[in-house]
Amino acid sequence: MFADARFGYLERIRFGLGYVTSPVYWVADIPTRVSFWIDDVFVSRTDLLEENDGLRANLLIAQRELQLLESLVSENNRLLALNQATRGINGDVLAAEIINISPDPYSKRVLLNKGAREGVFIGQALLDANGLMGQVDEVLPYTSWVLLITDSHHVTPVEVNRNGERALARGSRTTATELELVFVTQTQDMKAGDRLVSSGMGQVYPKNYPVAEIISVFADPGQDFATIKARPFAQLDSTRHVMLVFNNEEAQTSVRGAADILEPELPAVETGEAAIIESTEASTTADQLPQAAVDAAVQ
Image (cartoon, rainbow, N blue to C red; front, side, top):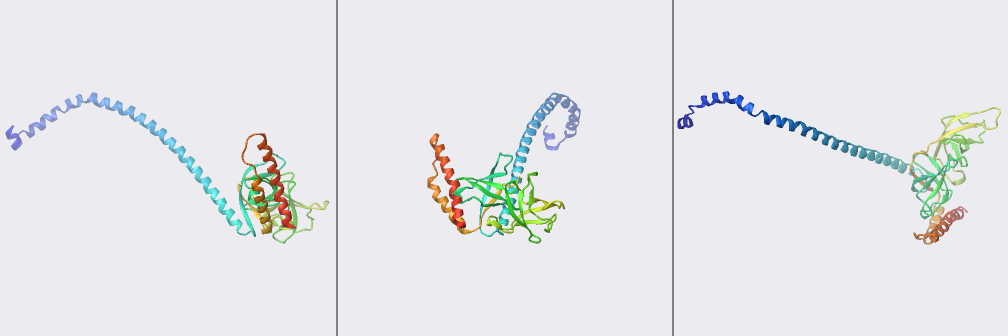
């Protein structure tokens, strides 16, 4: 042993004995290796199932965040377009948001989140980033209803951008998303593709704001007037962010003054029948004061 430790005389013998005894070690280790293999199979399957569930949950979360991001990008683009559109308008504008639509199938109206407190008045023009949308026809303390230009009871003074031909655009009685030009003689120069802009007649809508594009012109020799249809530029069915236009400073000042007068009269939040009656009276007053202010400003 001393000689082997010092000079390694038995190294070759140990190597041979190790070679001979290797099968014995391998056979003795079979139960352990089989046990480890079985454990690895079942543990690996369980881990894979858990990992798969975790990855599926992460994928759902990532998809939701992606949808939110796409929605935010789209909304940001709409707001940028709306901001750029306001630069071409003479006068102040008030940003608003469409929060509801009228349930009446025969009335095309939308509800805004702005009302008498923000100076909204009856007859005020509503625009989006692409074109004219309509005008306010009912004002409440915190909200207001807008009649869209595609309503059959709404008439918009327009003119052809190409040659200045004037006409009246009314909501189509047959198609919910189109306009009809009424009382257009067959001698007037209008054709498909012409761009219609607001003429400013009536001093309700800002002049030269895009309204619609003529899509068809039909002239019947047996009729006094031509049948002309147009498609609005405004995204009436999809847009949410809009703007209200104040044409002149006097109307805006008068209306906001009326809103200030109205403010102390608005009831606090109460419960019971008395609160409902007071809220109804306040809403009636809110509907009347802005219109009176506008009439006074115009006179």
